[in-house]
Image 1 (tube, rainbow, N blue to C red):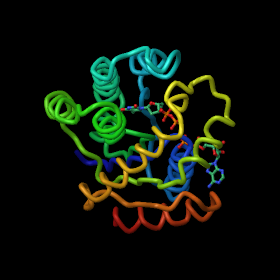
Image 2: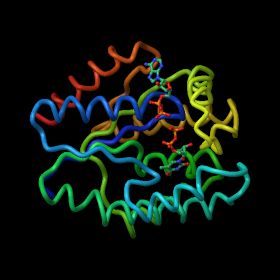
Image 3: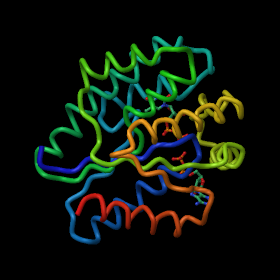
Image 4: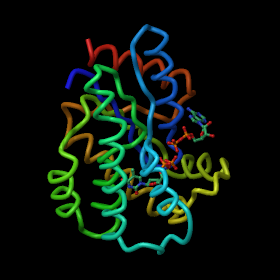
Length: 206
Ligand code: ADP
Ligand code: TYD
C-alpha cells in the first residue's frame, strides 16, 4: 500500500488524541494528504460498536467478548477507512489501534494475548509504519482523563492500579516492537510533546 500508517498509543488521558490531532494538522499544513481517525471507531459501524464498549459498567463484557468487539470494530474501520486511504497514498493518523488490544485485553485483563494475536493475524493482518507510545504518570493521566467528563469512562473507572498495569504493558510493547515504536514522554507541556512527535515522524517517514 502506498500511504503511511501512523498510530498513537498509551494509557487513558496520556494525551494521545491531542497529539494525533496536532500531528495531523502539522502534516496537512506541510502539504501532506493525511486523514485523522480513531479506535474504537473511525467508520460508521465501528462507531456503533464503540458505544457498546466505552459506556456502562466496567464488568459489562468478559475479556473474551471485548476482544471480539474491538476486533470487529477494527475490521470495519480497516475495510471502510484505513485501507482505502492507504491505497490512495494518503497518510493515516490513528488514535489507538491493535496495540491497545494487545495491552488492554491481552495483558491487563487475563492472559489472553494468544487469542488477541491469532485474531489479529486472521482478520486484521497489518501493522503501522510508525507508532507513538505516549508515556505518562498514571495518576496524572487519570486526573486529566476524568476531568474531561466525557461519559466514556468505562475503562478509566477500572482505577489507578489498572492504569499502572497498562503503562507497564505499553512499555513492554515499545521494547517488543522497537523498530516501529517511539516512546515519548507525555509528562510535559503539550507543545514540547508535539514538537518531539513531529520531528520523530519526519525522521521516520523521510
Ligand atoms: P487521551 O486521548 O490519551 O485520552 P487527551 O489528548 O484526550 O488524552 O488528553 C486528556 C486531557 O488532558 C485533555 O483534557 C487534554 O486537553 C489534556 N492534555 C493533553 N495533553 C496535555 C499536556 N501535555 N499537558 C496537560 N494537559 C494535557
Ligand atoms: P479512547 O477513546 O481512546 O479512550 P481515551 O481517550 O480515554 O484514551 O478509547 C476508549 C477505551 O477503549 C480506552 O479506555 C481504551 C479502550 N480500548 C481497549 O480496551 N482495547 C482496544 O483495542 C482499544 C482500541 C481501546
